[in-house]
Image 1: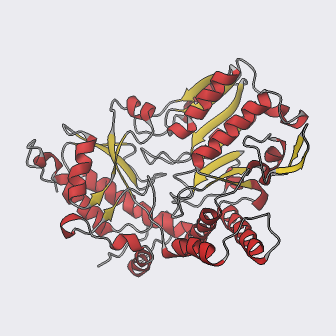
Image 2: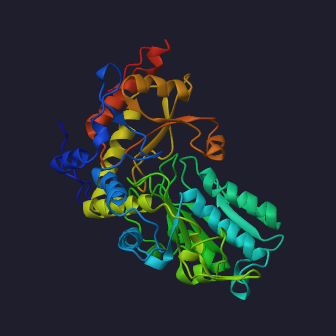
Image 3: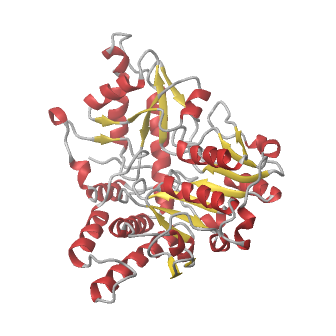
Length: 443
């Protein structure tokens, strides 16, 4: 039976129990049972979300009814495929507050961030003409990231710095895992050309206050690049209102397919940015000597695109929009409180991240004293609870907190309070399983 989810008055109306039951009915995999007949408790949505029927059906409909190459054929199937592909772009763009020509399809968010980094590298090498000179880096210019970044928003900037002679700097985190905005004035200087930062940490769940980052970047004339992988599936997000220059997010974390993501870029910047991947579908005129390129977004979409996946991502965006992201955020705020309380009730378990629910996702990383995170994950898995274990592609952040790995429970719109209780009971038995104590939870 599904519990009634209370409304958090600071977040707006959360999903009712009836609404939540209807949502769960849309996700076929949630009905699975695991070993020994245990029902699945899926708390690994921060890694990848489950998919509703509308997403699965959208992909199947494309393959069974209109499968064709987009932007190429003149026959009816090609026209229908192209229409569906571009309609999906419009759906996703609208979902994040962008215009259609400001949204580029990518294979994932990592590819989107790399696209920006390599395009800046191409501009530095003189590609793109006069319009692209604004992006060129010189030795001693600075690229600023944060200590909280996923490797996808760190390693590409390390590589760009190495190729161009730029200097990589970073903003630290407080002991509760929140970014040190007090360092913006000193770390982001007049030499800073790029400021790349996460909208929400995939480890701590902390949500970044974007405004001071954008304000400081504008003061010094730096570009802002936002990793929005963890925010777009869980919070109302409007990139235009946030004021960022670029933002990357993935389909598979927002109830959509794997193999597809999107990069948002302000129109005037995309117009000036040189391409990275070149070949078919992104060109205007090609001779044996030279080539001219199409306008964005197609300039950055070389070759055959992931058409079915993009259509599935569009369906996911429409599904979330219909639920209402205010309601999704309110539901997950209740889950965040329940998850933090669950972990706090178990002795010898420490949360890595904020202990309050303000500006926080329902993503809780934790350490069990005396037990490696991989072993924690195994015990929870035996109880039917799926969590993520390891460094979550954020080794510097784990190093900041003196640990090599954590276990992470992450919820989504389909998660229930009953599942959080199953998680709590399983977590309470971890240390006892290894003979460390009786594992009983405190009241």
